[in-house]
Length: 159
Image 1 (cartoon, one colour):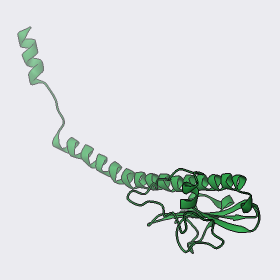
Image 2: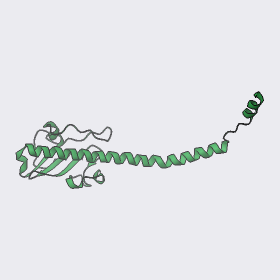
Image 3: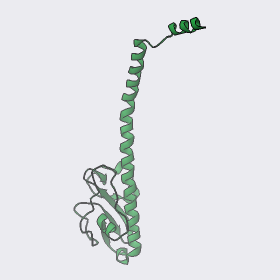
Image 4: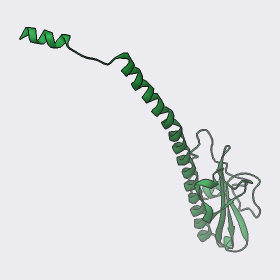
C-alpha cells in the first residue's frame, strides 16, 4: 500500500508555465474590457441620482405651491436654499463626491427673476415649469446652463 501511495505522489501533474501564462493573458484581456464598462455604469448611476434629486426638488416646489397662494399667479423662482429653509425638502446630497449642490441666491425670499447661479425651480401661474439643480462640476441643466423643462428630466440632461 505504501508503494502505491509513493507511485501516485510521483505521478502528479501540474500546470505548465505556458498554460499559466495563457490564463493570465486571458484574465488581463477580460479585465481590460470590463473596467471601462463598469466606469460607465457608475457614471450613469450618478447621472440618474442627479435626475432623481431634481425630481425631489420639483416635488418640493409643488408642495410649496399648495402651501403658498402667492405662487398661484405670475412667474416665481424658488431656490434650493429657500425650499430647504422653509422645510419643504431636506438638504440634498450630491452624488458627485466632494461637490455639494449650489443652493442659489436669497435663501429666505421668493425671487421674481432667475438667479445668476445655483439651483432653483421656476413656477409659472402655480405650475412647476422647469428645474435647475447644479453643483460645482455638473448637474441637471441645458447646454447653456439654464433650467430643464420638468417633462424632459432624463439622464441626457446632466451636463
